[in-house]
Amino acid sequence: MSAARASLAAAALLAGACAGSADPPPPRAVWLDVDPAVMPGGHEPDDGVAMVQAFHSPELRVAGVSVVFGNAPVDRGYAIAREIVARFAPADVAVHKGSAAASPDPTLASRALIAALEEEPLTVLALGPATNVAAALRERPDLAARIETVILVVGRRAGEALTFPGSGPNLLDFNFELDPEAAEVVVGSGAPVVLAPFELAAKLPIDAEEWASVWSTPFGEFFRRPIEDYLDWFGDNYGRRATYPFDSFAVSFLVAPELLHCDRTSVVVREGPADGYADAGGTKPWLVRTDAPEGWPVTWCHTPEPGLKEELLRRLAGRQP
Image 1 (spheres, rainbow, N blue to C red):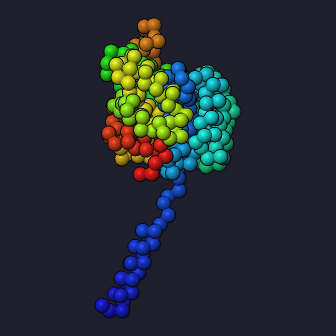
Image 2: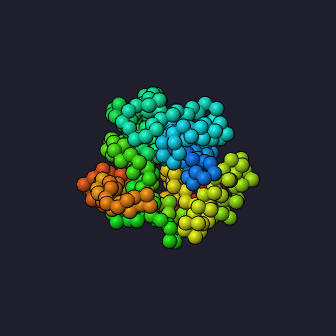
Image 3: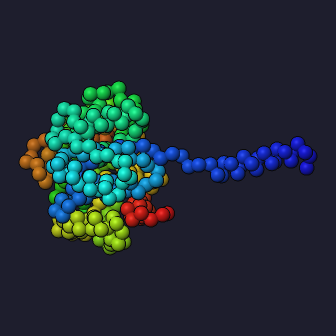
């Protein structure tokens, strides 16, 4: 080998070695907007599960947590969020109390989100009604350009009944229906939008035996009783003791995207039947997938890979891959 070729070969080897030892990318800065109800009888521990999933994901850095009304009154949800943060989050994560009802008015939470977006671009996970996020964008619509992605747990297909296998009741598109105007503000803000709708969660049941694999962990110490109560609710109403990880898909989209099938589409708000268990008939607004360019563009996630269940439970337990 000539001296020149030897020099080139050595340079190539050095470049390869440097590439192989390159530092991983910095974690993505995210903001969690939640409505946790991690308590016996709350029947909705999913926000809390997603919070721990995010805190246990080295790919993410949680820049802040805000609390909104929804699964629990905002004061109760705020106390629960503070407890979860104290147990599972880094010491510098702050929790901010937000809206107690659907309202365009600013709150401590919306102002905290504004301040965080002024400091750095963020990915926003809106796991409850979009009230807090919409209040921030109403006050500062220019900050939509600082939102790298906003992920909402809302949406349905035209004519879709929101129910699980079995003979249980139709559910609501809960986060959307509690504040439709806020969802419209966020989806129409110009920020890139990802939706994790009901149909996604309904395809990934986690049975009682699978949940038992994490009971001996710090996660299980705090979450076991509320999740077992949730399992009982599903068993009583749908004949299967299994829960469905609605809010965790927002985190999974960021940390395990290869395990989710999503596509680009559009959504609009249309009138649809008032068909949920708490409805009294008539019509109500639906946030509907159109598969046409007439509405707001979104990424719509619709099908999880089976391996996503194991991936979620691993993160909740704090186990390495």
